[in-house]
Length: 334
DNA sequence: TTATTGAACTTCCCAGGGAA
DNA sequence: TTCCCTGGGAAGTTCAATAA
Image (cartoon, rainbow, N blue to C red; front, side):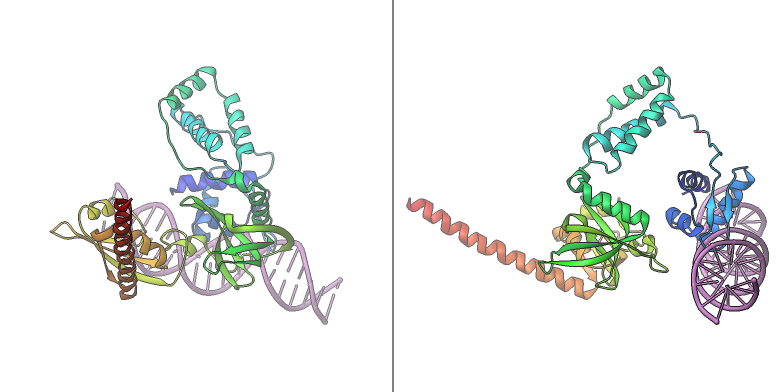
């Protein structure tokens, strides 16, 4: 993110709230506290009236009478905004649908008819399909979680744990909601486990507000928490090294799967993919998806797990073959 | 009423990384 | 090589809450 974008985000964030701590801004922008102070200093130099309230319960704020004039948008930018609106509101159960619609209608009101027409023409020539965000299915759940995250208040939930096939009541301090790979997840401090854990929202069977305030664990950073996760679940950190054979090698090197990844290209067309990964469960599925075109070199434990998985698969297919032959014989008899 | 404490803003110096 | 940006560390200042 550029310094300019960060500064714009700071202004927008401060304008929408009454008092914001520098640390909160740093977390939101995923940057350092001192960078926030420097950006605020730059904004003040540019005559943006950012005031500070020192001491306990202090923070930064922009006086209510300050009005930051919206920039003039190009037809392309307007088209992109309406396009995003089409995707989010019409098809995907966007959780802030009502606010988004009013924001778009406000924007429309500021535009000339010709600008709206140009934008509509641009949208009609593009289509884009993404899977549903499915928030409507759990609208009330989302409302309570989102409310408790912003008010920093704990929740009591009944949560279904897939691995143990049991429902357990837990008290959670909700930190963050994240949508990844077709599912919503809640990152929260679990009072029962005494650590920050990830919960799938659709496995929450019931939810109650406790009204008890909480503080985010000191030193917790969402970016650090998720930095080496393959998708969403976490586990012990491990250095994973995989050899990919063509054509999978060409596919793998096209993408950035993890920020820590390194790829060494060999003369024979294979690649050596290495990365630091938090938890092996998800990367195991990813590697298995490439079948015979991937070979785990490290760690040995993952190599053995995949080998055992392949043996099990082989057993299924050979026994299915026997069943298939038996069934054929039965058919011939009839 | 005053001293203490804790939280948050403020400022400085230094080092590392990337772009020019 | 230089400059700019960013982050680490540390010390100082301010102010509200709390205890004595």
